[in-house]
Length: 176
Image 1 (cartoon, one colour):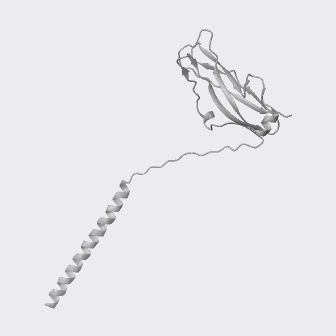
Image 2: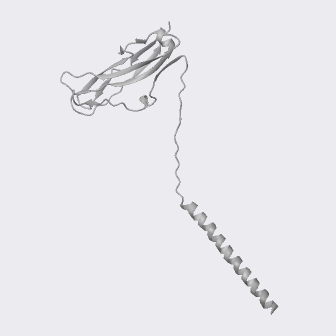
Image 3: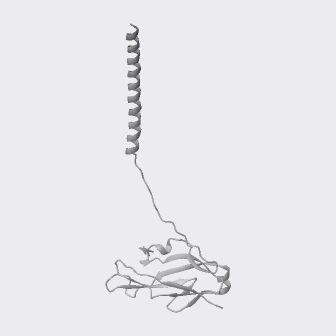
């Protein structure tokens, strides 16, 4: 009789171990399966910085200005293009700042139609020759100035279409 009781206890203990082991195994599998089904997002992006020298810089206050296409907006009521305007921070410890265009700025629609552009920097009209845009007294302290790019209306008026072009600006420090 004693051996039957001992066998019954051993059987119950062994059965409890199996139930506990099965429950533990089920919990581990559940945890692993939820991790396997988890959704994961990763974002990788580039970071860069340009730190100008304290001696000379001409930089737009909006850092994305030079990195994306600028759009001249068509104003329906007066029937003209709104200018592109952006402020620049400028400084030159060596003297004044000259500016010039690398090429004549024009918008072109792929056909025969062109739209010429006027470019001014700090109120000075720019062409292919050097123009003093910031005198030495202002450049040595640093200043915020306006770049203004406006369309010249053709004699026959603006022709509908899609136009594209580039404006190339070159800046130099003027030695006194």
